[in-house]
Length: 232
Ligand SMILES: Cc1ncc(C[n+]2csc(CCOP(=O)(O)OP(=O)(O)O)c2C)c(N)n1
Image (tube, rainbow, N blue to C red; front, side):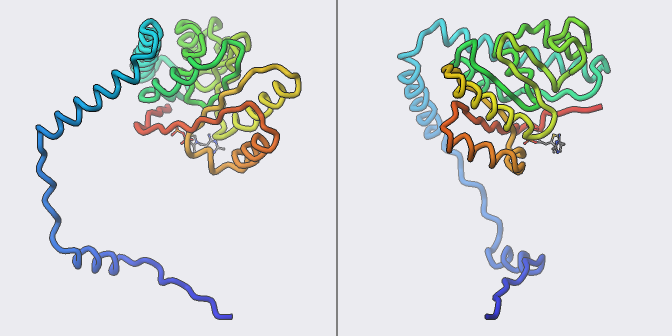
């Protein structure tokens, strides 16, 4: 049987297509009245959504998000000043995701994360002092200063890393969830990763096993839109 092959895309073809589309269109005019109405409508919607939530809880979640933002801004500042060795991946822009999800679990539940985990460690209850000391490589850091930015860890808080290998935490989180199910505890595991981790085979194997065995693991893909990663 003959095999049909599509012609590969070419620059000439793209050029032809774009010229046939005619001149570039002017951007649509902004209707400020319309925008204001839309903003007011969304604000009202938000108010109704928040109406059922406890004000104290909302303030606490906001406090945690601000703590993470300020912590990361300071981390960036001292990193640029050369006071932090190795890598330093910031959680800026992802605060709501970490704080919101972790606020829904218990203290004895587990969290496993990629190397972009400072904010998640703080949300799980680690003190800013122990996370910052870890960044500085001090013995008072949560991993005794031996792990640095990518290896925050605190067993007592159920924060099981901080993993430098892209996707490395995913099978570990699946295993933690398996252990909880096997031991009959009702703990849940939250597993955070960036979208590049979905290219790892272990991601597919883990999700497959988790679904087949109905493991108590929630896989959370976070999109780091700001490219907030720095390395020396
Ligand atoms: C197995 C493996 N391959 C490559 C790398 C190098 N590496 C470090 S960060 C990164 C990009 C990861 O992107 P993503 O998972 O989307 O997370 P983001 O940094 O965007 O939060 C890569 C490829 C690595 N750490 N591990």
